Length: 249
Length: 254
Image (cartoon, rainbow over all chains, first blue to last red; front, side, top):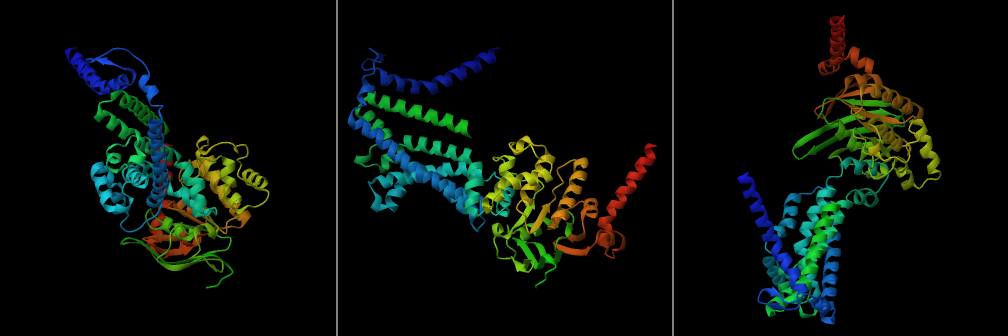
């Protein structure tokens, strides 16, 4: 009995530890003024504030960068997964490991590499998209490849034997049968690209400030209300993403 | 290499995967309209031979002919060789009707609906049009797989242990149906199995395979009663041993 109470206490403590920062973030967005650590009043003043053009621009930038990045990432993830699932060539395993390697390396390190390697793209929208692409595509590739490689080779062979070309087989057999993995990849990509901070901090330019960068900048200037609103939006997007990925896959 | 009597001809065929030589200089011929079986133990290269003929993997050496035509360099989807697998390989996201119509739709032939229903009637699966593969029994799935392959009238029918996953009673039924359909349609057929009894019953001729090579080719009767090869006698002798065991069991049960 004593052990059970102790276990329950530990679980409760850890849960509070995790949920507390998220709850406070939300609280920041609905408290216009604080006295010490106590909210003076509640209101949606910060939420109204983000309707100003500068903030709307940050939101639209986030969707544009995440959207464009996700299109590239998903197309590459699907084509790459098809290649690694259905073709044999020397060095295939090594190449696949190399492609997945950014998942094990710090985003900051990858960003530094990008800045040095692609000097002409520095401070452009394309560099931000490239950054997302390098960091997020391995995760999407993992999802899609896992789904695609589970399709029986016999199904593909049967399709060929019935007269279906490689392109037709890809469209009519492989894509529909790996749709769960691809959908999960799309959702994951959008979620990760929207909330990417560390890589965007290294690669952004003033024209293309996104929500995570704004949160960081607002936080450094002490304007926590706006940061709270943006954080809440990102938390909702992330939670929705996780839920949708689980649901779809 | 021209031979109008030939349905399928394999000449000096070899295939290796890495350092493993799976098929070693294989030579055999299936006559037009004949039902031939590749019989051998698991891992002897039967299925690889079938996949080489299907065109899903390229040979390292050798040529493959369908009739007079050299198809070695023709891609799988243009060879018109139909295959039926042990695991049925039905497209799980398509209904029975769509599965059977798949090859016809690619060929863009007229009267697809009539052709699909005709073959479904022949295979005794009418009424299952709207079902998905996971809503069918093993026997029904195998009938659909056969219907899907036969409806496009392939030049060569390849059967990769198609009866391994069905029960004994159904196996007996399907065996007769496959043989009857093959005869009535006159399709050159290459059947792969490791089951000696099945090969002896269903085949016009049998090629005994071992370690990527053909040991002997002959009619079931010739191989069973008159083979001079020790491997063939040992391999087919298992049927006799099975019959002996069955007889002994019957005696002990009395």
